[in-house]
Image 1 (spheres, rainbow, N blue to C red):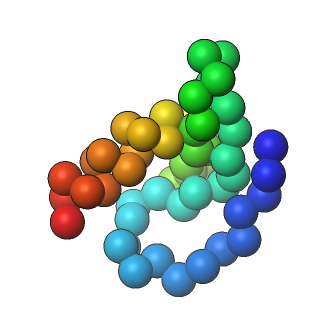
Image 2: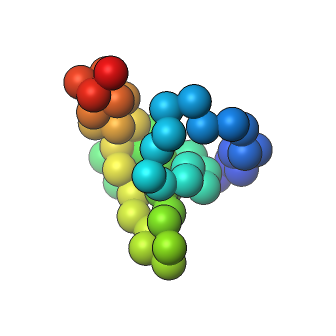
Image 3: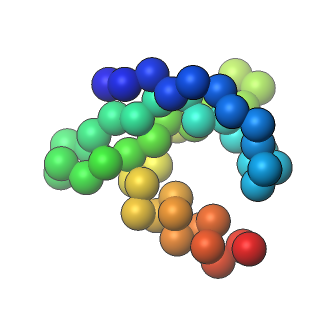
Length: 54
């Protein structure tokens, strides 16, 4: 896993991206966190959601 340095949030996301990882299927993923809640989401699904909400 690779650490992602914090940057200004121009998209005003509700969650912070902690780091990148890989799902068991080999798909790239992101670990997101907010107020003690933490979860993993596939990178393709994450990017699709951002594009849909622009």
